[in-house]
Length: 84
Image 1: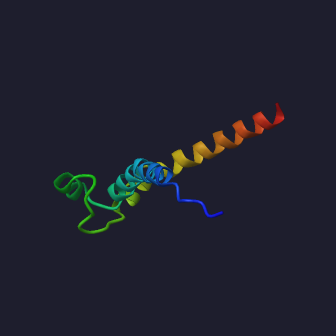
Image 2 (image 1 turned 135 degrees about the vertical axis):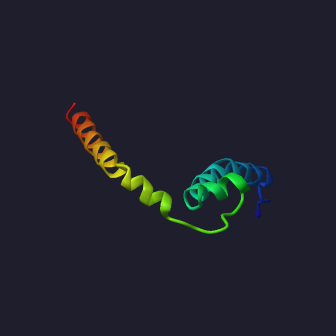
Image 3 (image 1 turned 60 degrees about the vertical axis):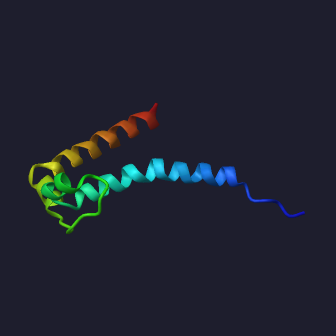
């Protein structure tokens, strides 16, 4: 017996994809554009030009040390949880 496609589930999946995908797109697009481009064109538009200056600025301001501290704390917490 051949089953009909579930259009309601497909529509629900599409809505869920937009709800999850749009914030991820905005976050990624914001990291790859300049502040001026973001301010002029808004968060949902495509970047005029791609730049990695935001990443170098974050690492220059100490992000690497903060990330390492987070890894150490996470490893310690996981170890304590496994011991208990």
